[in-house]
Length: 228
Image (cartoon, rainbow, N blue to C red; front, side, top):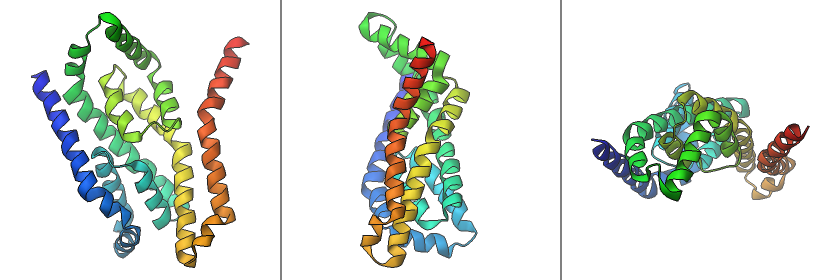
């Protein structure tokens, strides 16, 4: 039964990757059309965006692209909220798909003996006892969103730790990429690509650089606290 479920997970992810590669990514690349359709939907636009975001995340689409589109279509504060909601729904669905279909089979293959078994046991222990902080750190370190969505549930991490770790970890990066999307929209509206070198874009790049350094800063603070 566990192998049947694991096979289902492999087939699902394989089909999702093919679907995204041949349909999802080309569709996402047409930013102008997406913006036009979302605007035409009026009040339904934000709801459709959230649902679409969640579905695309489950199907392993790159979250960064969808986030940039949100920042380009909606006002900054609205886009930020919509992205967080869509990302959390997508991450939650991915978690339970991977947990139900894959965890038992993976544990059986890796076992608990030998170097691989010992290594996986340590990861399991870490994710079980300190899963929230581990997930938050990996999210801030820009480990691909969909990769962590499907790998973390294969460990012993509790769902609440995965959920809150994801929420805390994606806040900085989400704001940065929504802000970048907003800067791109500004350039579109101006009809001048030179607008991408504006002060707004410079701020977006500075925020991105700071967000990259955030995991390192937190790690240094943690070591200093332990030393004291």
